Amino acid sequence: MRVHIGSDHAGLELKDHLLGWLVDNGYEVVDHGPFVYDALDDYPVFCLRAAEALAADGDEGMDSLGVVIGGSGNGEQIAANKVRGVRSALVWSEETAALAREHNDANMVAVGGRMHSLEEMTRFVGVFLRTPFPGDERHVRRIGMLTDYELTRELPPLPDSALGHGPDDDLGHDQGRDA
Image (cartoon, rainbow, N blue to C red; front, side):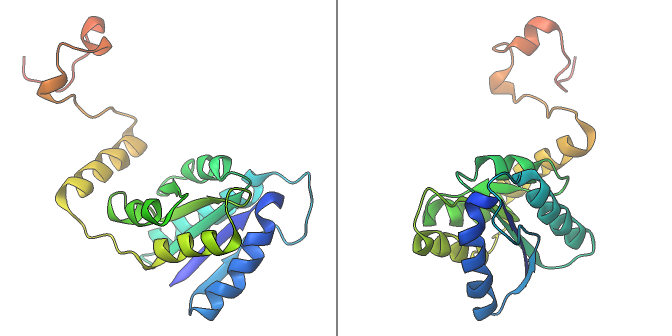
């Protein structure tokens, strides 16, 4: 499996550590930088490149995943999620790493290089990479709603249980219900 990886200066130490760990564990790694420490670098430069490459692999039907790393992982996750076709999850435990794959079919994980030890973050990434997406109908349906919105910018219809209780009703929006 190919793994795209990118970070910023705050994630450089973990990225460099993961490069070796990934290779040692049989992954093909594509490093999108940074390649030297620069305290003034900007995470979007590297994380968007990793996410774009991951999305391109997906478009070609390749089995690839990605990892983006920063101080907290928040900005890196936000950057990655700007790329169509990328579902990046912020991970802070083995459980969130597994759930990102099992419930969200996340194809990229974001971790905070200043939030955990190298050993912890390596475990989180390992769990993420080894956990399959089981394809449960409810999760496929929800991911489909997100993908549809990403492509069309049309909100999914409200369920019957939410009708008459939200601001959309006051605005007269059609929520896909029969008139």
